[in-house]
Amino acid sequence: MPDHSPNERHRQISDGWIRAGIFGVSDGLVTNTSFILGFAGASPGHNVVRLAGVATLIAGGFSMGSGEWLSMRATKELLEYEIEVERQSLIDDPELEQHELRDMFKARGIDDDLAERLSIDLMRDPELALQTHVREEMGVDPSATGSPWAAAGASLATFSVGAFVPLLPWLWSSSGNEVWWSVGLAAAGSAGIGGAIGLFTRRGVAKWALRQVFVTGLAAVVTFGVGRLVGTH
Image 1 (cartoon, one colour):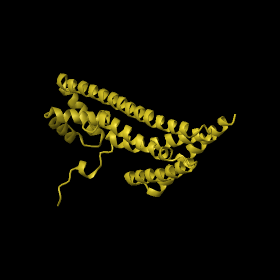
Image 2 (tube, helix red, strand yellow):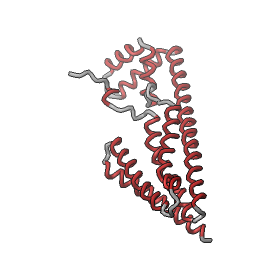
Image 3 (tube, rainbow, N blue to C red):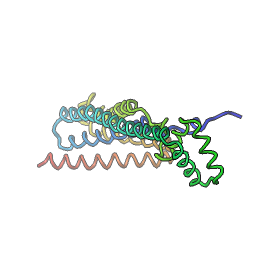
Image 4 (cartoon, rainbow, N blue to C red):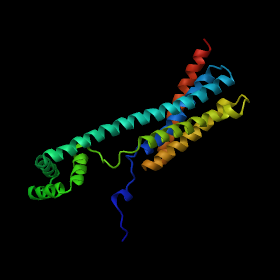
């Protein structure tokens, strides 16, 4: 019988880079599709639309990356501070911490005697006691907080990939059909992203694909309409 640990059977969905990567590419696609079609609706000329798309890709990518890094760094530092507070409490008042563990076990339905024995046994290993306190009191796994740099890199890279999709026709063509190419690529990209999210979450590929196409299409229609309205007045 194969020996599997719980971490091998379940994906580390709390890792920041996974979340940042999935939603980074979605944000990039929706944002740049909206910007490009908004500018195209105002009919300012091919070069202006292309410049807007390139600027959005670069600025949006760095904004997403830096924002993700700052957010995760702040969360990680706050968690590290709280862990150190808990670690010091285990040193200063181990009896109180043992009673807290006992009460937490009892609250989960473990009988009094077993809860007492478990809490005493855990307190013999300070690191294990600390991890248990952090999981039970803060609701987080101290070993699965994710890397701010990995999340920032994934966010920047995937936003840029998503933003590049609707921009591509404006870089290699000036035939006058760039808007339609952008729409087609954005629709295909949205369906692909939605399908990937559906596979990852196991909540239905078709449902997520249609949902992503709808969100992208709605944003594009609104911004194109605003661009057309502003550009004609």
